[in-house]
Image (tube, rainbow, N blue to C red; front, side, top):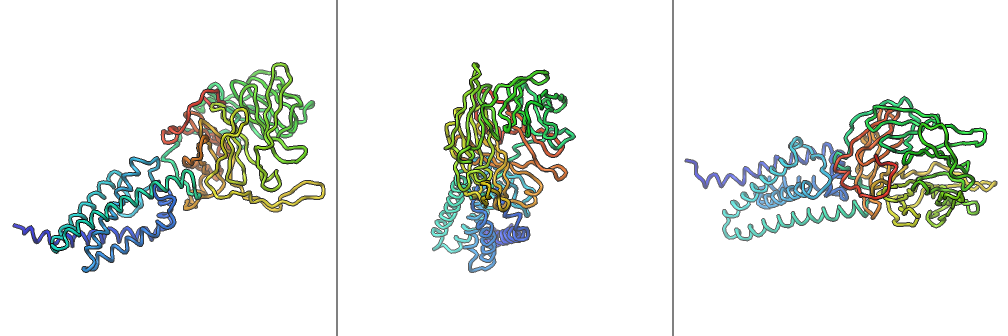
Length: 509
């Protein structure tokens, strides 16, 4: 029979060698692929806000533990550290699986092919092994047994507290006080199908009666209708009196079964039904504008330029039955930082379902949320760190301002939908993979009712062509990438953040 005392004697030594192999391999694999390891830490729901120093610290701790375990005089301390470290990893995985929307990739190495649940079981096994080894070692030296038990308990409690605290603090930093660290939602979109539209000049005009509508920059009088499954296409040519109106930049918008033709350089809005030959003007000589969005059938929000100050400002146009339309300006909404034009440039959009109007600045990390009456509800920050527009202009002798060099663009044409703001970002985040950034377009998602970053998603390029426009509905995410119209299904990891509304929405299917 095997002597139990002899077996107990070799357990701590055997477990020490096991931990030496485990941590040595883990440290080396992380160091050899350090950039990838740092990116993975950056995507971690617990550590993303601290990815910089944590990525170095984890490797250093693993090496120190290996040294302690290798020296007989420090082996007991090494077993304390090993057990506490495995406890920390166990708590980390437990929090990911139970309290996080984000499940990052494995950290690689010998356990790369394990699922997170299997990883959790393995870690628990290691914690038990470490604890048993500490206690067996401690019984060999009876005067220190109680002290060893106390050290074991204290070190493991400390590991639990450290990881839990990091999780809580990281959640706050990432969601509300972000230092430009992105976290990518777990499979928020699943690609269903795509259709070649044979043109890369298309843009989304809206959704109505279950159909997607698109305009064409190269053929501004054409309106294209595609059913939600991307199988049936209809094309309409809109009748316009081009002799009477000298349009320069025609844009089409679709809402509630109607299309609206606008230009802005010509103060007119024309309304009609897709397929009908006739249309009519609902606004003439009311206002010049450079952006227009539909709030409802009778309300529009627009961006214009002040004739006096030359600053950009927002306004609202109300269509009345009497024909005496009302225009109201809100010069206080857009904040000037430098010239009042380039520094205030941005994108105006609306979510009819929530009765929300948004304006996101192109060159600074800020967007505004207004209600349908254009009352400011929230002033939000995007996760990048550009608080002031990095624009340098020069005043010309004729009174115009020109940019001296290309500005640093921060945000794209963001749009609100169902209580969320979808923003195509122009900047790469901290610890974000250069390769993935190069091959995808990133869309950052925020809440519109409070300052909170929900997460990000990638839209993959197609034959070197990047995302040019997108449209969000309750079930699907549609993307225009080069010639391709792509339909994605929105999964629960994103859909659960939608907020229900009451009003109609041009994006609703």
